[in-house]
Amino acid sequence: MSAIAGGAVAGLLIANNIGRTTKGIEKAKETWPALGERGLTVAVEETSGFAIATGKDRPKAHGELGGHPVVVQILTDFVHCARTEIVVQRAGADAKVGVYPSPGGVLGQLRDWLQNDIEIGDEGFDAAFLVTGKPAEAAKSALSSAALRERIAGLAGGSFAGLELDAERVRVTLSGVETDPATLGAALDLALAAAG
Image 1: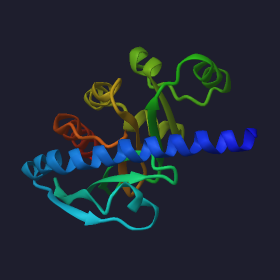
Image 2: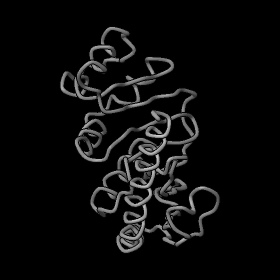
Image 3: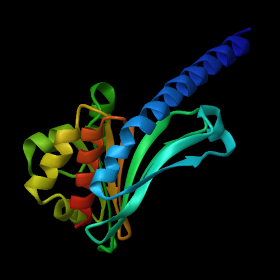
């Protein structure tokens, strides 16, 4: 009986994700054209595979800003949890850097215990974000700009889920389907600033 109950709960959670994602995509179709004002081409593209459960199409923006190719898109995982990604191509140093909201509670204590967090030297930023990097000095260098750290902090508390950069790209991830033009603009500005 417990396997059936577990399956039913999982089914309800997935159905909830599909409903929330579908509503977000419909709203994004109305709000994402604001990205066109930034110089991106906004189109509605057909979905396929598992993604079709959230609708036959979804918006996507692309173009070139500041000499960097840019893509803004909505992605879903196999249980239809959505995320909005802003990807900016770049040519940078061969390093990997990640910035994520610092987990609270037990996970935050575990983070401190494992000492996987790179401290930048900005006390407020170091407390608010988990920073990873290979090599570690790359993270300190990438986040040396107070203006860049302020852009990251400005998105915190909302849908900001992370910033990752490597030699080829910068990726800013927002939880769910982001429909607020101001948040999309701030995330796009962050990605472009991190791309250099």
